[in-house]
Image 1: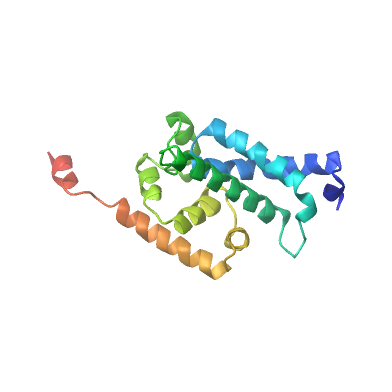
Image 2 (image 1 turned 90 degrees about the vertical axis):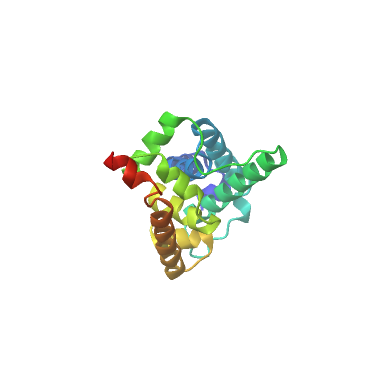
Length: 177
């Protein structure tokens, strides 16, 4: 594998093939464009530093990169918690968020609030499946779960979103007035 030899052309190809997906994953987790861009670059630097530890066990290189991205995002959350901040899924620049969730054809920011109400595993599944656009098999490789488990998490997440985004008390009377 040329990447293990730190071949610049190989790394350029890896970067161009995977940067957008890694960025989308981080943006889906963090919600701030600039921070997600910085951390996506950090993922590739970390990958380059630790390429010797990569073992091709039938999993794609992307799964390894997403594992690094997941660790980087989790480290960012831990650091924020130490500073007393909580980090919802998306909470940054409103215009960036609207453009990003436009891919989901969302009509309002209520979707973000609903996603923030999901469990960590459900949020990860939603981000990987719908924001990044991975298959259930690919998401399972990244999360260390079977394809069936990803489908189950996806079904539970969608059901939870339906409950969380359901009509709130008093809305029907207000809209009738």
